[in-house]
Amino acid sequence: MTAQSSPPAPPGPGWCHWHKGPSGTAVLVDIIEQGSGPGRQLYACNPCREQRGLRPYDEQP
Image 1 (spheres, one colour):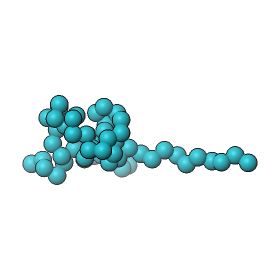
Image 2: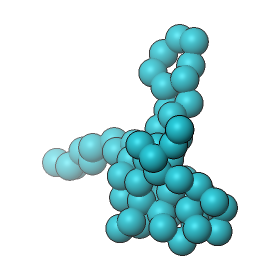
Image 3: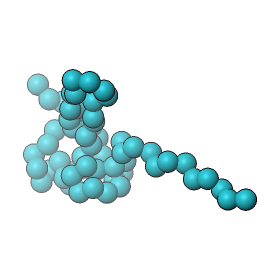
Image 4: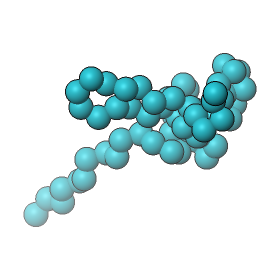
């Protein structure tokens, strides 16, 4: 009998979309709206936010 593996979870908190790796400091920095289908949320870790001048989504004007 072969065990079935579950599909990988989509990236979210704990994943940095800028350095494309896991992170314990990743926070939501952008939401990309799409005309049809679900939007996309982008997360960035603290070092990537500092290097690129990104601000958490809830702190943006």
